[in-house]
Image (tube, rainbow, N blue to C red; front, side, top):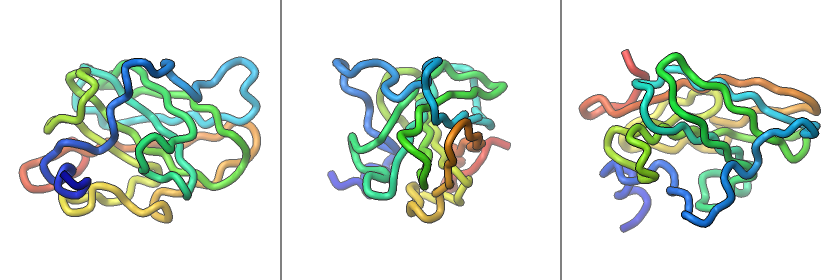
Length: 158
């Protein structure tokens, strides 16, 4: 099944992690010199997990090509995740809410990207240029608004 058909059927915004992966590769530590604090807002519920992934232009939305990934428990009030940034430069953030916590992309899961580009059933993944954010040395911040299926459209929770 190609990626376009899979996303139209609600089967994948992002690949599920392999069971043997190290948890939270790319998470911040006390010694992380460059970091990005990602505030995720608009979660439809407090169940499951929220996955935040950092990409460069070359790997944007390609399976396994993220530069860092962090998973945190979902909270209806929003969550903030800290992800290590390899070096100052241009990056994009992709967020997935695995609403039932099963590690798979399901019909009720949500997604979002840095700069909150408009999504639709025919365009679930924006181009890198629509999600790119410049990150400097030190601590950076961004906010991502989640989007969910609403009938035949996709958008923030109302």
